Amino acid sequence: MSLATSFAAKFAYSGIDAAENVVAPPKTPPAKTKANASKAIKAEPVDESDQVQLQLQLELDQGESSSVRRSARKRTIVKVEVKDEGGDAEDNENVKDDDRTTKPSPPGKNVVQFPHLKEISDSIDKNLICLFVGINPGVKTSETGHAYAHSSNWFWKLLHSGGCTDRLLPYTYDTHLPRLYSLGTTNLVARPTANQTQLSQQEKIDGAPILAAKIRKWKPESVCFVGKDIWKVFHKKYFGCEMNEKGFEFGFQKMAATGADLLIGNKKSDGTDDDPEFANPDWKGARVFVSFSTSGLVSFPPEFKKQVWTKLGAFVNERREARGETSPKVPFVLEA
Image (tube, rainbow, N blue to C red):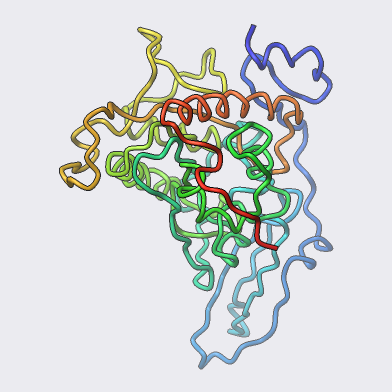
């Protein structure tokens, strides 16, 4: 019996569809109100000579949105201050990777530029046990420079409760993951946004070969896609076909025809691997583990979340033992 089926009876009331492992869509979309829109933006006139023209469509709380546009009559340019509503791109209410309610937007429909948000560096090293792939940096992640930085995100909690780390780490320890635990983080898209609906579909597609090249270069034993939608985009670009939704389960993915482990990053077209520094003749490709998004707004039960990540933790610790590594690899004391 699959994990999703075993939890279906217990949590049937919560809207979880055991057959598809997704959360059922609401019957009616939330109403848009001017009151809520006013909470998320603060506008102030800006002199036209400043050449500032920001026309942003902001995804607000409860799936609402608001646009601040220049008036055609008054030619008044408005500067918009973005308020963080808890919406890291990897931690927001518009989480499409769990197939909750929404269909993908047409490419470029909601694309919004945030020039003040900076990209973050990958935390990566060669021959990791697992490389975690998020969708793209959110506001909090960009502001702090650390992955999964929003307080409502479950990533660091699940990393610990699933057994990948021996203690609960603060988000500032993302840069220490390779050295201490043979784990790493990266994203499908490098550009930060307030939430992932502000990425175009083309940006996600373009990120797939870049990710494949990283995998081939750094040669992790496994790759965890932190969100089903990330895997779906990568799968279509990498294999040239849609992911088979029938019978999908979170966890390690298998070849449909043979049941063998599905491997990625091992194609010559993925990029060069002739650098002797990264040589690993035993590496045949990275295994694929697919998780739900770790957004705090994803409504799977906590027990289910932990059980999925425990499967990953078991693999990570099995590989540590085979490598002769401990968790952590070197003793350390958490910084205050």
